[in-house]
Amino acid sequence: MTRSISTLISAAAFALTALPGTASEATFETIKVEAGAQLFEAECRRCHAVDADHESYGPPLDNVIGRAAGSYPDYDYSVALEASGIVWTEAALRAWIEDNAGFMPGTKMRHVGIDDRTVQDFILAYLASITTRDAKAISE
Ligand code: HEC
Image 1: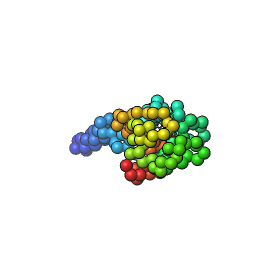
Image 2: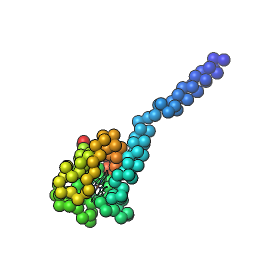
Image 3: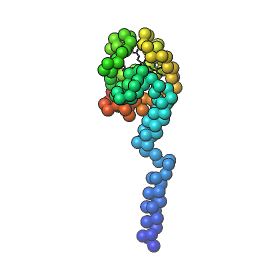
Image 4: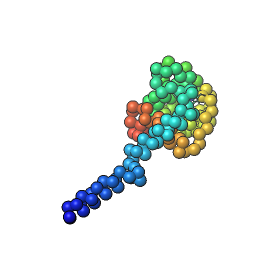
């Protein structure tokens, strides 16, 4: 009897850990990356591939976090971007997504103006997921 109650309790405890309300940090990250992929699809993909194998009007954005601006091999950047001397930290990318033309006058990327911080977070989570450097280690 005692034994079956304790079996029941441990079964209930197991069931609890599997409830949706107990989603882990890793689950949140996966959801953010998936949302970011869809937002990237809607806002960025028509101009940006995410690898060198695909035709891309803008520079491909794989490994962009931590990359020196204007450094994708053989891409014909504007002078403004090529000479900017910045590195694409998450903070720089946030400013760029919010107001690229204001952030860097002279860029040839058409203005995007995504000022919703949550949308920025999702797009950044997606860009981090296609970056092989440790994106978290790159300063804000
Ligand atoms: C209408 C086309 C277009 C859209 C839409 C667009 N971009 Fe761009 N993007 C460009 C072009 C063109 C450049 C090169 C700009 C330059 O050389 O001044 C660029 C450059 C960049 C760079 C600099 C990369 C490097 O190698 O230095 C980043 C980062 C970037 N875009 C991110 C984004 C993100 C994120 C989105 C979506 C929110 C987006 N872009 C939407 C055309 C676009």
